[in-house]
Length: 95
Length: 476
Image (tube, rainbow over all chains, first blue to last red; front, side, top):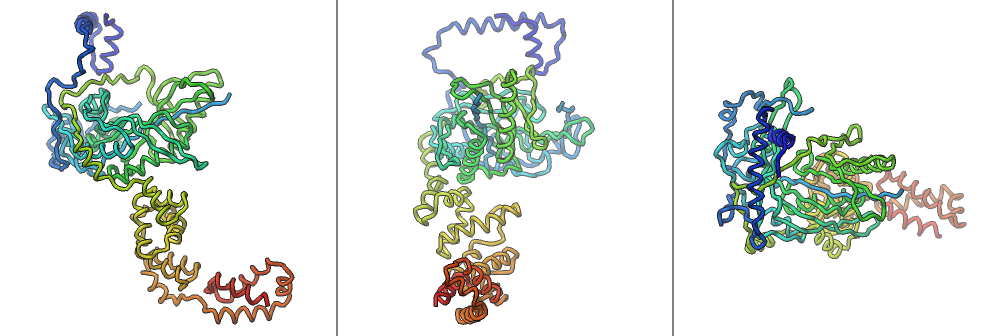
């Protein structure tokens, strides 16, 4: 399987990554190599293997339902590019 | 052509935990923006999610209540998409192995029959933050207080065939999660939200039509309307040679129409994969048994008990048990006053009518169960008339105290039978023509006499007593 230039552009858009047109050919080649490796792994028969959700053979520990966090808004917002009335401001997202 | 609509619902219920699903931040509604969004909710580097035990318990309770399988092992997955109110760039959800699978819910249809709606699955996930698009000079304001609030997403089978059935199902789930006390059910605050998958197909066809998804409809009334306009839109499209496009649509309540929300090239590809930050969730039989022990009497069982114990009609029992608080109110009144049928009538008609009119919940009712019981006891004994009972009800609603206080203050007491007899004798003497008519078989004239007696007694006579006395005296 090869990843063509169009697919590379689409993935970049989904990931909100800005990529140079000149770099597309390179990405296409590298990503295709990765997919070929995956194909190679896919060829291994795994019929008898239970799918693994996590490499550790352990289960999730749970916490009690208690509020343990205090308001640290000021500290968090001190590194935000723009805030107003306690809200984080971002470029308008609605069309 | 005859068309059949096919509907499935995805209901998002915010679980009523104190803290978030993966962090110790508070979930209280209405806090100042971003004061309940901690480092985990913000997705700051280096943070790790830790699952809330109570959210898991609530999911188990729901699973048991709909007769579903509670998965001994379920897995959290990342659902990837970009939106500013989702700080991590993915939502932690469950995909291939949800915590609850294959349940069912019975709904009642208008013709009195019942229908079973399949519940495909229910899974745990985190809510996103909120985007505010107004007032920020071409910027969007983000409040992340809601980010990380636990949700149980309940997905139905496409088993519903009309908007009415969809609403009936949604109301049943709403009632159930409130009974279980796992969700406050507050639709205005967004604690209970619904997406509807809608498609149409020619009657008799087995193959499903292309569906559209209606997003975030936040009231029972809007769900019904939104589904109906979408069904009409799809049928119009197909009958005019068009095709339904699979897409997400938004319902506009003011224009009563649906419109496409996302164009096709922006269709989401969520690229789900197991979240490496979370280990599989293991639920053992002790956890399930403990949850089973904590289940309250559920709506269907309570309804059956009300019909048996209080001899209520199916319809009345259904109305009284749809909401847990209403059922408790009714039972308190009956415990204090007896008279289950009288209590049911007053709660279903007067009390519910007034609550609806003033847009109040039963918890906000100015007349406590104790107050209503006091009044009903007087009424049942015949110490007051039905008309007086209504006046007392109004007075209690306005905070004028209990029934006895109001009775004393207003000097309410039915005219005694001697006085009623005197009025009747007087009327008979004065209206010989009407008496003749009645005795000649014109039964309707009785109404005239009842009206005159009530008028003469200024409404204080007991109509039942007036009737029997009149019948007796007019016979002579």
